[in-house]
Image (cartoon, rainbow, N blue to C red; front, side, top):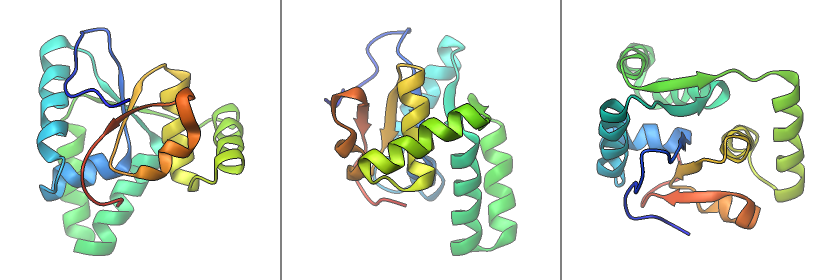
Amino acid sequence: MTPSWPRSRSRRYVLDANALIALLEDRAGAQKVRRLIEEAFRNDGPLLLSAINWGEVFYIAWKHHGEARAREAESKLRNLPITVIPADPDRATRAAALKQKHGLGYADAFAAELAMEREAWLVTADPEFAKVGRALSLYALPGHRK
């Protein structure tokens, strides 16, 4: 199920790396991510991001645009209402189980695990998350994977 717009202040969102890449590169879906960020600022309720996915955004930015642009992106992201959730051994085990059960990429499994644990909507452009089924609520963005 894909909502068209955040409908309540109590709804939580977890960002997949590709949602932030869409924002940083002004790709398809960037406007939806901007709206979620604006809503998070208004409601003083941060968006969530796995530390693994934070690193994935940095890696992708560096790979495609060089270290200087990756550092600029990191600086911009630090000013957004995003809470980065660390990966501890229990979270890593749950993410690994999701990877094994559903064939997700390793970093993607951390995004899915966090969304499921926090009962949040996963903001993503990656159709692979549909493999998880109803246990994972998706806020789908148009566009590329990563």
